[in-house]
Image 1 (tube, rainbow, N blue to C red):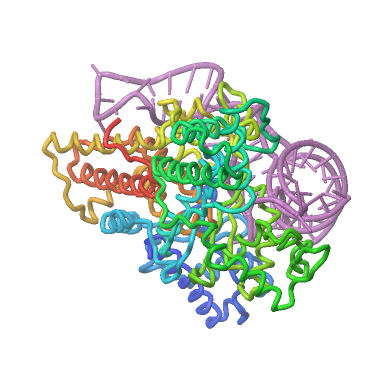
Image 2: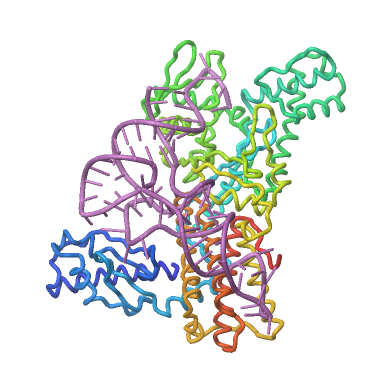
Length: 561
RNA sequence: CUGCCCGUAGCACAGCUGGAUAAUGCAUCAGACUCCGACUCUGAAGAUCGAGGGUUCGAAUCCCCCCGGGCAGGCCA
């Protein structure tokens, strides 16, 4: 447990004990202690920790909050808590202040933990599957996938840091209607090379990639597939182009530093009979009915807004069935404790349906969590870049990564929480100045490395600090900085619990900010060897924290820049 | 029509299990290097937290209603 958490826990115990003592002494009535919170005050001049216990127990104790606070204060023993004193303020807040031992303990903890600092075993023993991107293999990935990639991969990393066993997975939609559409698109483009007057259907894929595939296929096979059965032609085209596309997805995502534990093909669910099995199971349980020649699932009986079709009157399953089968596979067949999907917000309506089906199948649907991601707008020269998916002119992930550094992309896409629409400023992402938050954070790291290098050259060796050395760190900038460092574990945990990695990009930005302030206020190399050592230790600790977070997000932590 | 999400300074956004002066960055203005990297820092100015009502000792936060924006509601995916 981290120093910060330990301190809060100790304080909570001390407060409870003080209340019990006060009650025993008759200073407070014998009533049950209501739940209270210990938090970090918004205005830190009030204290390092604040408890609202006196205010929330005003009713139970039939006394004014400040009176209660005074009674608690009188019986409070802060020995061994890393806290020095307690003040009563405002309407009855009890404010507490760290002692020097707290700050020393934080720095020692970071030094001892090193690359592990910030991690916890909160999720130990739990297996989680994070599915993200899962882009349609019929075409290139777009900026939405870029956001999903950065978010999903970082979320997985955050969960790992919180102790979960995490697997990353990409679901390949290599079956169903869009593959038919893919086939049609390829077919038309191929035939167009040999015949005139063939029009692309409106709803086909109009991108250049389809034209290229058709051309390359024609270069390889010539007109051999012009006069064969359409089925054979379509199959040959798909068998040629789809593997190339999937390889492309893998290659592009790898370039984006995303590596999956598994690429799961939808087609395997059809081949294994898992898709048919879902319909069979739901039917056997009596949750389906026939209407107009189609098989419907009684989703409205399981919390969804309306029933929906599982098997169309033409005998083919709708897209939801493989999806149900896929999630059934995750949670039942493979037995993950939790399945997390990172999806575009336009899928929100479909989540209750999926959950309804899982519930009907006897699966606890709360084991499926969906992180919905809002739209991305690219901004250039202060204006939104128009995106048009239909015309095939959408900006692809590859184009984006050609324009901006991977570090910037991964950082920027984790700057905002998933559920808020995001303006991605292309100019800012390329900008190599302090305005660019990635550079700002990386610069702090490089700056520390530079200080450490300079010290080495000066012949000043970094040694273990004593408590006396650490006690010299008393400047406000030093105290603020160490305090921030102490919170990394909490931030990781919160990010994991809320599925919100963006907390950590903001946190690491704050750390960098406080470091720069410290740097400007306090000279590391100074006349006092002990103080120099203590500040070096602080620099090391900051480097560890920044490095750990950047590494977690697969962003480089440069030694110099 | 129904459901979900969003609305906080000029811009982009934190804060939302109710708490003490609504945080941060950009932009604006004024400052700081003969000194560990100025890719930095200090200061100023800028917000009726979309509107109204309610609950509460206390509301940006919870509830209701309204306005505005986005998305979804196919035998498409």
